[in-house]
Image (cartoon, rainbow over all chains, first blue to last red; front, side, top):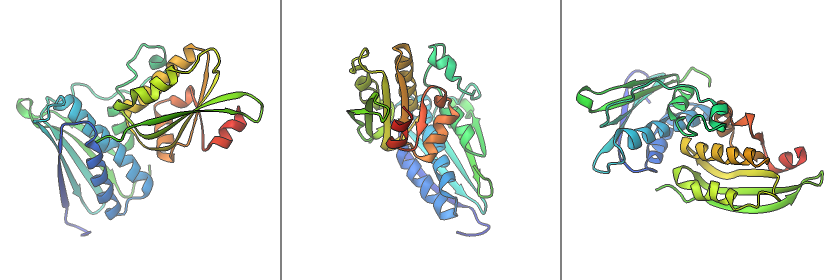
Length: 147
Length: 119
């Protein structure tokens, strides 16, 4: 890959559970081409999958007429992934799951996706689209960063 | 699109002589895996089964919905007085399970032999 130019790969997914694996595979292939170590590729795969699941389920509300956009921008030493949906964007920041509260039925066993995204990549931000459309999450992992 | 989750139940005995029920999963562990993960567990006789091993050796993909199903299983097992352990997770999913705190309620082992030896 080029040292300075940014290479962009785009994928559009139907808003159907399971298709997040297409984005995972694409992100994995790009990250491997860039030279990311296997453990960082695995981190990225999970983060991208969770971002796509959120976009499919919460952003596009499983409406198969809407698609999820995944834009991977490979720079010299980092990979940025934007996952775009037609929702209003996340209204709250991710919180660390409390396993004790979950085990005691005081917290939903689900709701770990945003936490995993934030924990597994170097940067994560959720951006609400104008007019309630084209909201996205932007993920970034860097080549020189250990997991 | 998501691969179907298969599950199988084996009965083993630990080196210490304890009966151990092994739930072996294959495929993806995701939102569609409720029957395979929870249904298989709930079909076990609660009075007879006290030690449970979850085998993830043939699982390639686990997402947050799948982790939530594992947590639900742990909740039910804890309430029934059962002990749950797991083995066969990749290094990545071992890290993820540790991050979300599952290791507080289920010991993780690299393989079946190590898990059985600890019981």
